[in-house]
Image (tube, rainbow, N blue to C red; front, side):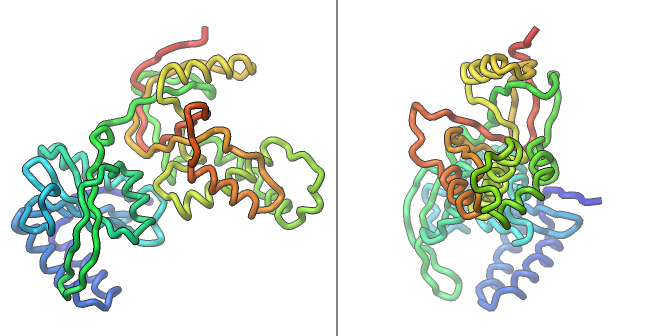
Length: 344
C-alpha cells in the first residue's frame, strides 16, 4: 500500500539522506553542508522536514531559526521570522504535489512554534525555481546580495518574503452540480485523487491518438464535445506538469469562485442551461490555487503542437484584465464549511 507522510527529520534519517546527496554530487561542498546541517539540528538552530513515500525520503526542506547560520541575515531571520532553504524533491516525484504537502506541513509546524514570517533566497538564473516560489507566495522582494559556498564560489541571490495572506487557509465558493454536499464534508484532490474530467479524458484516449496519427481524416470534421475536451485537457496537463508543476491539475482540482457574487453568476448560468445545480457552498482550502482566464480554454485542434501552444498561453496567464472571465482552480484538502444557497 502506498503511503506518504510528512515529518520532522531525525539525525539517522539525515545521515542517510545526506549520504545519498554526497554520492550524487562531486563537489566537496556537500560533505561540509552535511556536517553543518546535522550540527545545527543538534544545536536547535534549524529544523529539517522530510516527505517520506513508502519509507523513502523523496522531498525535503529546512527552516533556519538562528541568525548566526544564515548569510546576509538582516531582514531574513528574527524572533518571528524564519529562513527557509534546501527545497529538494527526487526527480521522479516532482510535479505530483508531494512537496506542496510537505511545504504546508512545515509552515503549519513553524506557525505553531510562534513564527509569523517566512523568507527564502533564490539565484536569479534559477527561473523555474523562482516561479515555484512565487506560486507558493514568495512575492515580496527583500533585497539582493551575494553568498559564498564553502569552496569559495560566490553566487548572486535574491531574497523574498512570503505574502501574509498566503499563510492562512483560502476560502472560496463552489457551485455544486454533481450531487449535494454537506457541512463538514472533506474532499481531497491530488495526484492520487482526481475529478470527473480525468475519467472522461481517459475514455477518449483512443480517438486522441487517432486524431494525432491521422489529422487529414478529421480535417473538416467537428469534434464531438468530449473528444475536443480530451485534446485540450491532455495538452494542458502536459504543459502544466512540465513547466508549472505546482499549479493544480485541471484533472485533479475543484473549480471555484473567489467571491460569492461570482459564484451566484455561475449558479444562474448553469440553471439557465438546464444543468442540474444543487447548491452554492463555502469551502476552506489548504492547497494550491490558480486563477486562470476561462476565455483561454480552447477547443481541441488537429495537431498536438497546436494544442500545446494554446495550452502554454493558458498557463502563462498573460493579459488578464478586469473584463476577463476568471476561473479559480484549487486542490489539496478541501472542507465544506457552509451551505450558502440551495436550489429548491
